[in-house]
Amino acid sequence: MAEAERITINIAMVDVGKMDLLIDEGIYATRSDFVRASIRTQLGLHKTEVDETSTRRRFIVGTEEMTQGMLVDAIASNQQLHIRVIGVLTLTDDVMPEIAAAAIQSISVYGSLRMKDEVRQALGDRILR
Image (cartoon, rainbow, N blue to C red; front, side, top):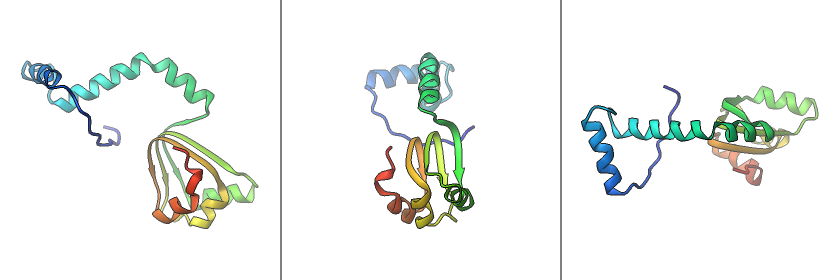
């Protein structure tokens, strides 16, 4: 299974009971399986919207890892990076705060953004989402 994020949701007790009934009938193994299947169904219904928006807004879909070397290369090329990810963006532990601040103009992540606290502070309001 792909990398997972734990979330908390509130569900009406009647709906919980209906899920448990389906689990008891062997249709789903667990509540988590039911919720995952439901989310995948909804995402499938909205696939066109997600695809069009991610293309139009130039998002990378999946997992992206940025290293110190990649950021140094961007600086050497006089590039200011606008990083957009749906999934997971990781700035590796070798990334220095001053290099990140010099290379990155903006970051927008729908999902999970991982970096050292010092790098996060150096980027400040450049992290849009």
